[in-house]
Image (tube, rainbow, N blue to C red; front, side):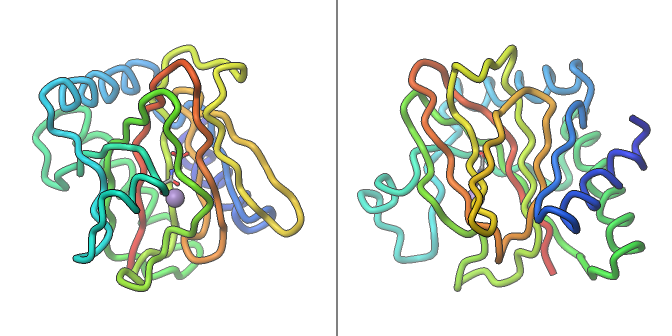
Length: 199
Ligand code: OGA
Ligand code: MN
């Protein structure tokens, strides 16, 4: 799909079904580049559990989520990170122009879930961070199969929708409305970039 059609797919999905999914949002080469970056940060010991506010309680946090993260620098000089950020910026411009959303900030991190780790059912907008309007998750996994597990459940109305973390797939939903949950993959690390469009 051309870029504008990808953007339309995500926005139409959100408007009609509360969530949008687009496969191949980045090319396989770009996804490999992002995956290699993540592996470099992970092997260098630069990925840590997310700290939620100043009352960070490691034990309690670990019961809720088991991933480790690395925040992407918005001025990154890494070629594939710069390309990632530029496409997100074009999406934000498109979203603001078509939906009057007033997004003026964003933040993205790599996430690494070791086998058996999960993120319990939650909303992405916290009391301490009300600026988050839209959530985006881009999966970086190579050759993921449904039998590998690791699905994202989206709780929409009375329904639970499952999205598997296939490399190149991007999911888009509202941060303050759509509860969701990351299920464990028993045998494989599960890797992604998760981020938020903010006001
Ligand atoms: C998150 C999250 C979903 C996923 O990082 O807040 O819910 O599928 N991620 O990784
Ligand atoms: Mn989330």
